[in-house]
Amino acid sequence: MRALVYHGPEDVRCDTVPDPTPPTDGCVVKVERTAICGSDLHIYHGHLAAEGGFSIGHEFIGEVAETGSGVHDFRSGDRVLVSGAHGCGSCAPCRRGSVTICERGQSRVFGTNQGLDGGQAEAVAVPGADLVLKRIPEGVSAEQAVLLTDILPTGYFGARGAEIQPGQDVAVVGTGPVGIMSILCAQLFGPARVFALDSVPHRLKQAEELGAIPCDVSGDGRERLLEATGGIGPNAVIEAVGSDGAIQSAVEIVRPGGFVSVVGVNVNPVFPFNMALALMKGITFRIGVCPIPELWPFLVPLVAAGRLSPEVVFTHHMGLSEGGAAYDLFAHRRDGVMKVLLDPAA
Image (cartoon, rainbow, N blue to C red; front, side, top):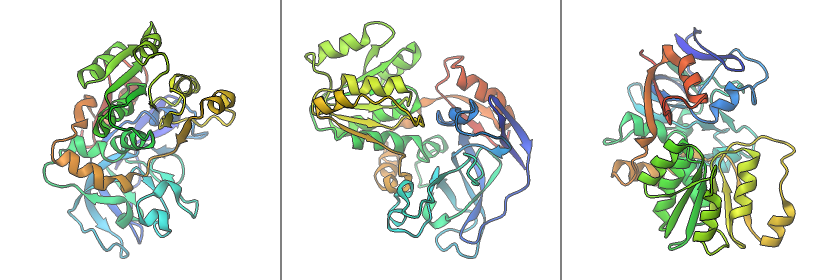
């Protein structure tokens, strides 16, 4: 079969790899659609993986093709979401869907060089199928379903962590795909205003079209935000970039007593956190990897009912064979790209 394989920094190719076989507690999923996530770029640029030779990707949906003897809830032919994150499947957090805080330390993400092949492929072996799969209900499109495997739950996780109250002001730092999901999910909690901070014009435009107030941080956007909030900043800030500077900015702009919820990926072991500022402001700071299956009961019905339309982030549709070009396009933000959907059949 074919899969996108990471060979080294900025070198992703569509290669022929061995067909997967189902684990005893898992299944083989024939991939229908898969997407490139912003966190995949950390691998692409060589920041998370020292060596290449593994298939990449954690956002994918498909049809169950074959099951292991230990799978009870799914059968061949089921069309399913696959959680981008995975746990042991037996500890208390994993059983409730909180797979990213596995008590046995077995939290993993598909396609990150941790012994779990990625979903940017024609087929994938999925261990722990009863834990990380969910049937796709009627009324949910392929584009919507792919987003339910990671970034829509991540946006909701960020909004939930920000403890948004009705009538409050919220700022979202970064209006890439996760930032857009954060804006959509923040609006579910009834804020008075959602401010969107970025420096990329087409991203700010989309944020505005979705009801956020754009703040161009390459100009006077940050000053406009502070002015609009009486000089004290928003009640809550969702950080959706992951860079040192973006996280520092979130801590700086939140008002005293406010909440900072970080869903951007940052793996800097010597991050320069401004502890004195956080101490004097008395803020609550949260960071973590989204527990995707835990949030499906909230989000799948909202998408199926038309309350959330996350598919607005897809700007480009390409074939798996074009994977290398797709990564190059996404990494360098060309052609107004927001998010790329890949078809494994092409």
